Structure formats: structure tokens, C-alpha cells
Length: 585
Image (cartoon, rainbow, N blue to C red; front, side):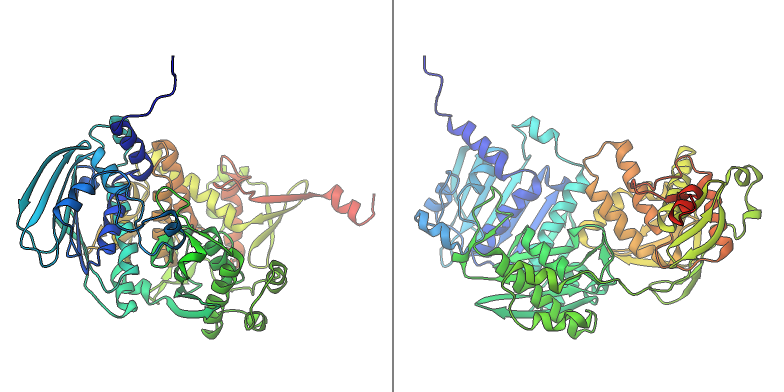
């Protein structure tokens, strides 16, 4: 008996859909790419319930004839390639011909389209991959695709869709990404009949940057452009003072296609090697223009990743482009300047040029710091002296303060010898346990701000912030909408460092998006850890009484020896070890 058989078209289409259509955002991505390939200058995306129940994309592109509209729902039907050799020089966003049939196979799907200069259009209706109806209709030139009840016939996949807010946020990020790549195209995004993004056509990239990412964020970018060997790297490099906790603020494009590319991410990070703290990521909007034969777009089912024929050369070109811009803005160290004036051919040259140098010490104060708005804001959190702590807490503290080293470490002693405490890690542990204790009691206390702080976020982040507003309230942050993408922070926990409110909100958003697949209990811990980034930082100068108070609170913690992220809070050197080093033993 034969055990191998050819799958039916229905099963094959659903397998293809599993590769191409992972969620509503991936469906919108494929439809967006088709609209842009059709030379559209106006695109409107409408979604309901985060795209789970309804997706509509309308454009004013070239449209399709009746025959093409019917053929478009067949697998591997495409107008963009003719032979295998065409895959080596892809110039369109879409090319495989799998998107439309894959989406249509797992939804209730329809296309309404009309060619330019045609008198009549075509309506095609498909249900679960099966053609239902084809009729003539009236429509202006262009195409409208409607997707209803995505994955209605694949319940296993529908079950794993995320919340409405998370799916909507993913679509917002996607539309934002393409809106940045095509400033000459009008983009409009509507969710549940509410306009989320309206980006008019413009010939100034700075205007589109401000429209998509927010005016205040756009003001932190430095434009750059560099060309070498026929490759152009251009875009906007973020100011080193504005960073995130992951790469979500780094948008990469190759020939106007949003991509994920480890060599390009690496180039961006190398450009900021001595300019941003370890564990922080600068913002960047990077465009690479390269001849299509030197880049492979066909290495990933969803076309997210690309592969360059000479990755090191592309990486070096990007590195030189961003580094020059940072140097001209007087941000990059001058000892790197000569290294980027000529092409670098080998990896070893870069390692020599980017040898690690110690960063200059940045003075700061723990109890008082300038907020982003420039006003001085006082911290009213920790008790100033150890005497103010409860008697039980003082008895448990076994560290005696000696001094502060490099404004980053607290030197103390106990009965066994010398103890060096990382002030940031120690304060993170203290804050983490305070917040977790508050949550066990229902919520943390909140301290209202004399001057509320406004925070501008992207359209996608606004969904995440609204979804987590109640959790923020429980940990002491009162945040409310003030427009479509602006929020007002009216209260913070009493132990919060006032000057870092905007940074803390963005860090919280990053953590919320990264932990969306975690269980509720684990996700809560991740979000609390993100709030703990408001702790005193390295290079923050502290008063003696502040150091004493922090040591006492640390030793009263349940887990005083590690921060919430697992790093040690202290290291010890016993008297015996010290005496041994001085050859007294």
C-alpha cells in the first residue's frame, strides 16, 4: 500500500497559510505590499478587534482585470516573476504569489478591483479557499481586499492569537514601518472606527518621521547619508541619550523593504559602541539601497530576513555612514575619526579601531535631578539617615558604610571583611521587593506630581499602554490618555526617581511587548522589573546618609544578594584574603 500521497489543495493552502499568515499583522503586511507594488499613492487600512474579526485594505493602485482577479486566488499566481532567475534580482515587495490564496484559505475573503481606464470592476468572493462568486461591480480604479473572521476554519491557530490590544499594536507597528519607507504615499489606519494614523503625502522625510514616531522623538534624530561602491546607506541615527532596552526602536530597510538583519543591527550597535551604556539600544531608522542581485530576499517564508552576498562590506558601509554623522554632531569620540575616513576591508581592522575605552564619568545626584522638561524635581523616597529606619530593620543590617567608589559602588565592611555593593543593582532589589509587596496588598502607594509629565508614544505603543493602564496604577503610576499618542503621567510611586519618568515609561512598554506570551504571574514580574529601572544609576553621586539607608534596606530584603535580573548586588573580600594579599599569612 502506498504511504506517500499528494495533499489536497485545501490542505496545501492551509499549510502555506501557516507559513505566510501567522496573525492579523502578517495578513496586513502581505496586502500592504501588494498595494505598494500596484503603484498606489493612497492606502487605507481598517481593522476591527485587532484584525481578528475584520481587515480591509483599500488602495488607488493599478487594479486588476476580471481574469487576473480570479487567478489571484490560485497558489503561486503572480505578475512579478517569470522564471527562477528573476528571484536573483527581485525589485518588488511581493513575488511568490502565495499571500492572497493563503489568506483566502483561512478566512471569509473578498476582492473588489478595477483597472485604470476600465469602465467596470470585478468582485470576487472566497470562503475558506473556495470560490463562491464573481460579479461585475462599479469601483474607482484600485483594489479593496476584505478579510473577515481570520482563522475561523483553523481553530487551533485562532486560539493562539493574542489580545485585541496586542494584535492591534502589531498592526500599528507594521503600518508605521511602511509609512516611514514610503513618505510619498498617503497612509490611514482605522481601528474600531477610530483613526489611529493619518500620514499625508510628503516629500520631506523629517515630516513623515515626526508623523509616525512623534515630533519629540523625531527631534532626537541625526540625519546621515553615505555612499560607497554603489551601496547607499542613509537614514536617521538617534541621539545617544535616547535609548531603549531592546532593538524595537531600530527600523531597518533594504530597498525600501522592512527587514530583520543581524549584520545591520551589529553595524548600528558598533557605531554607538562607546556612546551608550551596556544593555541599552539607540534609536535608528536605516535605509540600505543596493543592486537587487547582491541581496537575497527569498530566504524567509514571510520575507522578513534578507541575506547579502557580502555582509561584511555592507556592515562596514553602514558603520562608516552612521559614525561619520555622529562625529560631525560632536557625539562620537575623536579617537575613532581617522578610522572611518577610508574603507575597512577586514574584520580585524574594526576590532582594532573599536578597542574598548573607559567611558568618562558622568556626575549626577541621587536625590535631585533635572526632568526631561528641565525643571528640578526632588526625590522624596528614601529616609535620609539610618536612624529613621525601623529598629527591626537596623538590627538586621550588618553592613557599615565606608565610602563611595567612582560614584557607582558603595564600600562597606562587615564582620568578615570588605564588601563592595553595586548601588544600581542594590536599589533595583529594594524597589522590586517594595513593588511586589505593594501588589500583594492590592496596590502600591502613589505620589501625585506637582507638574504632570507628558509622554509621546507611537500608535502601536498607545495600545500597549492602554492595555496595561490598570497594572501601572497598581504599581503606583497614574497614566491617562491626552490625545491619540500622548499620555500624561500624573502620579508615580513615592520611591521613584522623578527625572526618569519618560525613560521608565518606554522601558515598561518594551517589557510589556516582550513578555506578551508569558503567563500572567511571570509577565507581572517582568513588568515590575522594568519599573525597577528607575533605580539609582552608576555614576550617581550619593550622600553618606543615603548610602547608609540603601545598605540597611538592602540587608532587610528577602534576597539581598542579587538584583531582580539575576546580577550580584555585592562582592566580598574577607580579612583573611586581604591579609593573604599583603603576605601577612
